[in-house]
Image 1 (cartoon, rainbow, N blue to C red):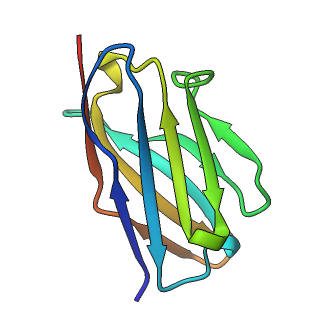
Image 2: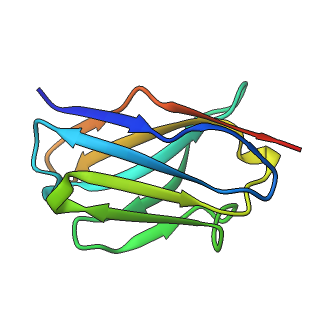
Length: 117
C-alpha cells in the first residue's frame, strides 16, 4: 500500500525557517517525480516545488530563492527546506508522488504551516 506521510509543519514567525519531510512507503521512490503542493484557505492547491526522478527541480515563482526541495532515495524521503517564511506561505502543505507516464499518483494528508506576522 503506497503511503506518503508529511511532517515538520507548525507555527513560525515571519522570517523564520521550517523543514518539511515526506516519508514514502509501499513504492520505489526513485522512480517517481516528487512534489510539494500547498493549499491556503479559500484558494486552490498549487505547486510549490518539484523534483524529477533524475533530480531536476522547479519552483513556483513565489518561493524561488527561499525554498529548496531535495530527495533522499535511499531513505525514501523528500524534504522541503523553507527559509525567509512569509505570512502568505501559510497553508496546508501536501507531498505528491507521480510516476510520469504511468498514471500512478499518490498524495499525503498534508501538514499545516502557519507563518505569523
